[in-house]
Length: 467
Picture 1 (spheres, helix red, strand yellow):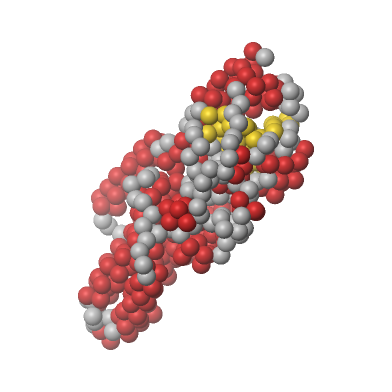
Picture 2 (tube, helix red, strand yellow):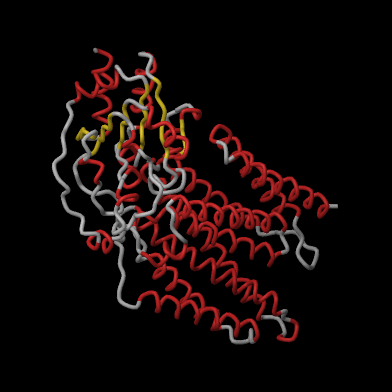
């Protein structure tokens, strides 16, 4: 009877995962979708703890270890999630994703040790294959996510060396070949640890040279790896809900990776071996000063925006760094009260992770209907009086369309230069995350408004109120 109830719980949980994932595609329903999926996962966890039976028909009994782990993990996760700043959200996503990969790898190692303790003739090669896949993919995801975490918080720099791609392929090929051999000859248990070591090395080398501008794609790809590793665990334990969750994460991560590559007009292969956005590309691009730029005063900015019919705000990582999303929303409300139409133009790879700007603005309770995707925004820039760019750089750089020598050439951008007036808020003229200079800053219609985004927006709000 307990097994039937558990099967029903797994079915309900799987449905909540699917429905929750669907709801995540709509910003207005994303929060509810996340809670729904979390509720389904909670049901699945509790159902497994109290209703699962092993091969001997016995229930789980080590409740102290189980609930001790749940309690410690729950407290650490909750505190970390509550304290994290929005600017640090991408690295937290990488960190949590890496923990998922590590979990899958450790499960594979533990289950392999259980497996080889059985008589050799009773070991199924298919089970060993699943264990090896979970170990290899989970280890790569863990190591790669840790490097991505270090890159996003500035602790790890982009590094590459001659022949690195060849070495990467050799390390991966060796790990795969040893995995195949171990699948056929599981008595060589020490090979499991060699595969683990090689997978860790590959995960590090695979992410290390990838430039900063490609990190959203890498995070999405590593997320799909963790999903596949979790699905291997589902196969291993014949656990339907674990299998379903892993497949959904793997499929969603893969699709998102493809969409992100499409948004940058680049192939996944080019992302993984091109080092786009790294220090090497910055120097290779030969970025130099392209002429003089003009500044605009705060009072002039306030006047231009107050008398505009339509204002488009382009948020970027600089907005997140300054934690200015709430002040930005306040500016939007002040302009709206004056009869100005205000919208937000969101580039799909703005920030440091997929959907970073959407999450940032959602925290400030910005109306979802005001968030425009790149294609929609590009259709409206020609009828826009003022574009206010807050910390965005590479996603508005015309070099993507005009300079074949630029490393971002071919990447779809926000066509802000079509607007009547472009105002760019930056701390300085320092290049963006891709390490290349932005020719937009030197265009006749562009004016620079220097300063911290939050302070500038606060002063701008006060100036507009008094105008």
